[in-house]
Image (tube, rainbow, N blue to C red; front, side, top):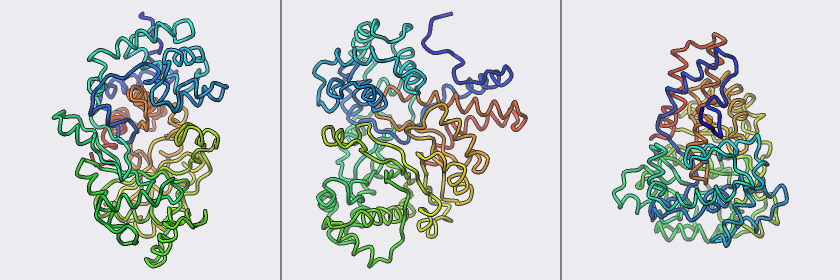
Length: 466
């Protein structure tokens, strides 16, 4: 048997009957196309189609799962090249990563990384201080070949749709360049309006003014502001966008009278709002975004529950999104009620809810999605997109929401090479869950095969209108 970094039965049940069923289910879905409707890859990679510069820039610098673990053990972010436009000594960074690779034992990152190392680069020996240079030289050499250019990897990964995440003021020039090139891949933008709906976002008023310039609307007024958002969404839709994404601290929604909303908007523009008023404005804007989604058909995603930039020193030195974000308790039942009072019964509206507070899955989220026609449950996200998190999600959500009020899997990653690895983990866990239902005589085998296909491919396409 060929030496491998990963066992072929990883994540499957150990009981013989369930293992046999899981293997059979996985064989049916293993090679289905990847639908990646929510992620953070760079559209410029595919527009320019230039080689990735080096292993450290590819695997370490963009992956906060990687550098947050190293940082937790005292490794300097400066030594990892974090925050650098170009890593000065990528081999040094790689050696630090390799010598600390043992830190990832038992984590999903280890599964994702070993999958890439084995399936893409053919490694059989584990990454370590001893194999660091072998890994670096092999990867660096292959990155300069045509087979490892971004477009070639997209096709090799069998990706059918890949969505990026983009600000309302983004020019979308990379997306336009991809289209103009004649390449047939579906790389779509997603509308992420946080920068123009969150008064605490740095440069909030200036970004709203920029959006007004782009759309020809007077964004100093409430009506002009809402019209500008509608026009920005339309611009995204012209490039193929099918979804919006909202990364709010909480799931709080509001439904203020128009005059009160306008007054709050004016105060937010002035920069004189309190923390409570900032929360109220964000809450109102979730409801406004739901109204717009009902109008234009964009699927709405709400990603609440992360205390962003928890480490103030890291934030001040390295900026946003540098791995110091921490999950917090989240209320959905009361927080979503103002929005649901208006739109909860709209079957033509799709709102996908994500959680970082696992205690809400069986108590709040599954009952909500199991009742309201507009609601669906997103897959385990961020700190929970692990084998254990995925299995807990299926166990807690299925009993109330079933399978068909969920939306399959999305990878939510900046690390391009981890996309097939993450989808492989999700497919294996779903097969394991279904195999156990078959073994317990709770599901017939033919139904399990049908559900496996739905969870892998069909539900995500339906939810995101792809």
